[in-house]
Image (cartoon, rainbow, N blue to C red; front, side):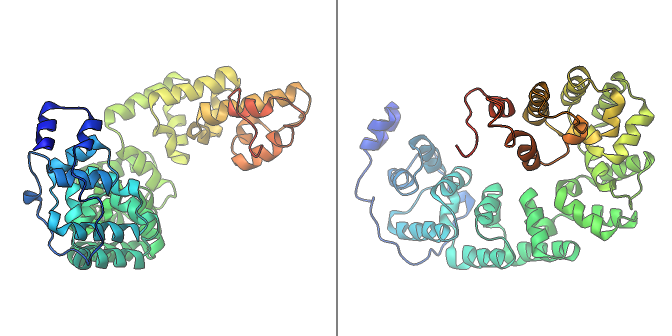
Length: 391
């Protein structure tokens, strides 16, 4: 009664929580849960005070989030031990409080999942096939529907399907990190049709495996779209057995013809011919995956600040893949400071220097001189008050 009145009056959260009943805060765990609620009977228009109390005190949800969740799912006071057993089970599989809270926000009804007949065999199968440790909660949070997906009719067949192309559990988990929906891939005929097309077009199986791992969503696209993209990439002079084919295919599928043409026009306006653009694209397809703004910023910095000619960017197309603010500008500033103090004289060209690893750059150009050049670390980080690592 008091809780209902408080909700209607929209009182402040602190007063609301003070009115919640206290008798349910401590409850001993019990054997696993049995009934799995259907989605139709787990919703309601008004919050349950017991559910609200449990979500706040046992699950750690903020009051407003708990209010929203409690309107969608009601816990049975008599079976609360079963829900506590579920939470204990999740925590034994690397789920922490924040994972559980996020999961409740996305799908409150999961609190009614069975443990013995649903989650336990499913988690055991996933763990046995490489989805274990912190990867398991990450996977579930990225796609909570996995909790409702059948192990026997969907998840196991999907693993079998993926393994026929990827070969190892390690490669399967690498693909799942990018697209958890692949756990339901056996339900998607489009992916099989798209794979059949690529194999028919002559794409080697090892390249197909790389495509599934690096860009699985491209294989979930409409069949007509991938047919068009394959033909477009081949028209540019890339064949299916070329190393860059799958990367060019991925870039082409991410944009409409209108966007593609706009990016070509931007490159042409900066001084390149179509022949130069497409020739570079075949060596480094990523040059056209970035926005028009990113392309302009990159070209502007290298031409107007670093004083490189446009042709140099065609020689080093991977420079387009670097962030100007996070990498190019700080490194350029460090090199300039060192040159101004005559600490480096005969140095390799700046574009090739940018291609070295960050660890090597730090060793050769920052850590090596940081004690001799006050503020060098701040120049590298681009901040005035950042201290050198390790100090």
